[in-house]
Image (cartoon, rainbow, N blue to C red; front, top):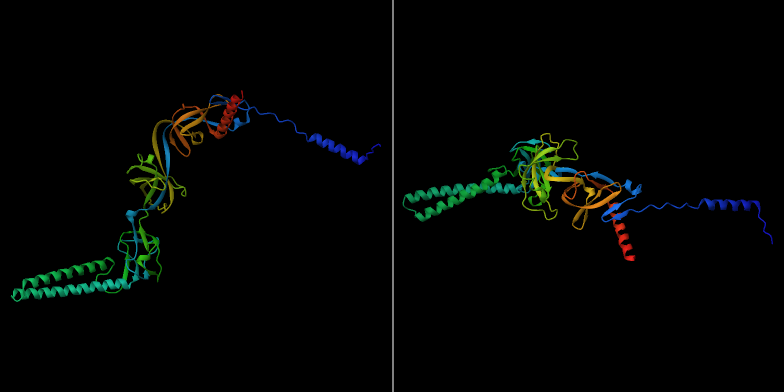
Length: 385
């Protein structure tokens, strides 16, 4: 039986055959693989991976710039934090944040029954001391008249001395907080140093208890001089001795680094951060630096004769550092090096490189992978023979 095809069917078959011919993919040219030569890897010319491998020359360096994390805090030698010595209620506030105060100036007043009890104790002990003194005078007169024994006179002298000491103690206590004898229950908070009120945690009518104070009522400090707390490593200690100068860089301020002077270095290592605390002092005449600002302390460390390469060019195999050195175009070899210093941007090499040699600084991991694959392929091929 003969088959008959309609015109639309023939047209559809022709289009399908043409599409099948167009969908046939042409064979992709094979990219030649790099060749391993001992610890060297040779890429064929025009290999696409060569464009990814960027090399730079090793440059001589005698010093490096070290940056350490730092934090700006109040100068504790010029700072006073004021807490209440007695419980009470805030009656009057005489100072606010940003206000300059002099030594002895009143910051606030509290109505304190506890302080009133201390004032009353002072008044009582003073009255007892006066009475004991009068009694001693009478005992002396009787002793001189021959009607009193020496033992009784000595007892009166001892009682008078005890009363005087107790009165002096109570009076010194109340005088320390602004009152010598009067019983007015007014506890006065004063600044003992001249400076600026940099913190205030007190409100009118607030009830205060000395045993429940999480923060000081007032903090008075001199913002023109601040401390810098630096987290140093053990290798930084020879350079960060008292008197050394460091440059303080504050990222939040668009200004030149300011100079700070190291004042003290702790004798212990922080068990959590494994850092050593270094304290420096920085002048702040324009008051641009603020308490709790984060900064970087920068200084130059002398390292002798060495070569500087990018930190991304150095790799670690076990305990040995190595780099990829580019010889002829497309030829790379691994080279063991001795690292003098590892920084976030640069690494200093003391041995294993010569000045001017090219080291791979970008995509070195790709080169390491290709070298490993080539070594594995060579090793496998040798076992199959």
